[in-house]
Length: 253
Image 1 (cartoon, rainbow, N blue to C red):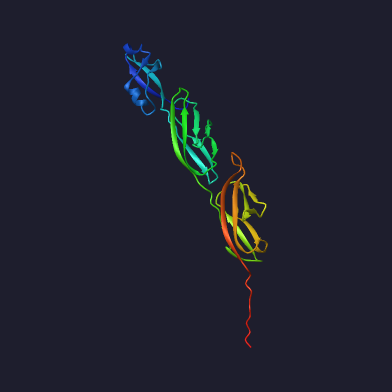
Image 2 (tube, helix red, strand yellow):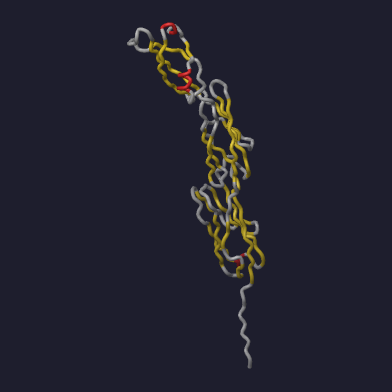
């Protein structure tokens, strides 16, 4: 049975005068198939031979077509911009043809596509479904692609000559890499992960960078993005490096 079609059977009694009808549209049949479709005319086939002399027993099989209805669901993976779409189209005469519009200039004709958004924002995803008879139905849903959040923890005041530890954290479970920079210059080789993000830390000896204000930065990159590596998140912390306090002893004579 093709998608969107259902069969129901109804039994009816026809007099001999009606037995030569090869098509029939009856109230009983319409009622029996009302919940299944639009109740069209259908051929009747004679039933078993054991029938009464004054009547013929006829079994009618009705092929009811439900209206084409487009629908879908989606699964947005954290803040990576990766979205999975699942077709829920029903009715009509299958199989179906699909046109997905992701609202960022990209389309897909797959049944259950996966798409990666390069930028955060508000999108309206549209699905146009077409059945074998040429009938069309559409559905749309809003989609919000968020920005990944990362944070840096550690001392925002440090002493020259001291080593401080700083940690970066970001929620989510996407593959990528993290890079530390200080005043715009890379200060480590980067850390990569394949699944869930774990806190990344770095030790900084402030003797190597001098007194004053410093901008500590973290950049999180998705190296496996659909259209090439893309930045997922960035965060920073301003750190003030002060001289090491000098203890003085005043002696009174």
